[in-house]
Image (cartoon, rainbow, N blue to C red; front, side, top):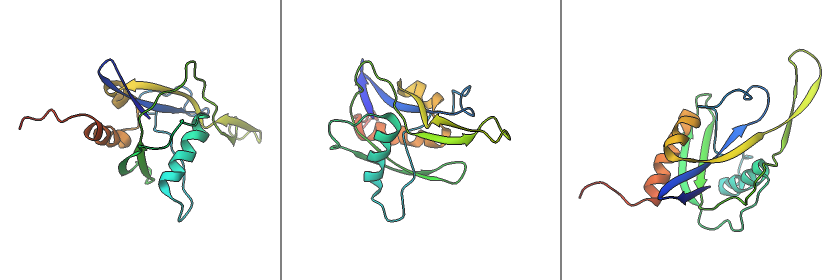
Length: 152
């Protein structure tokens, strides 16, 4: 999701939940995403994941902009789309939960939200906050929605 505020492009990023990301900030934020089943329509899965990870369903799913795909450091391929919108004020993330053993080797299972918070960031700040492998999505979004400033 992106919006335009004060003549600037802002993008919505999600901060991963759970103890491993609790103290991580720069380089840890991500676009809302998930894993698609074999043969599943990727745009439909992106729309479902957006709603599941944020607990918010946009009023419309029209106008999605294909941003292509990237390969993350761990080898996962991420396909992305963007759409213009905003979150209701006030907004509280209502994410799916995942279960993991915590503390490690304790044999105790604990639930954590997949996403613990989501915020809009200006493009400049988003480049610092998001996973480095996902930064090309910002470049592609900029090219798709902002007029070219290159000299003719």
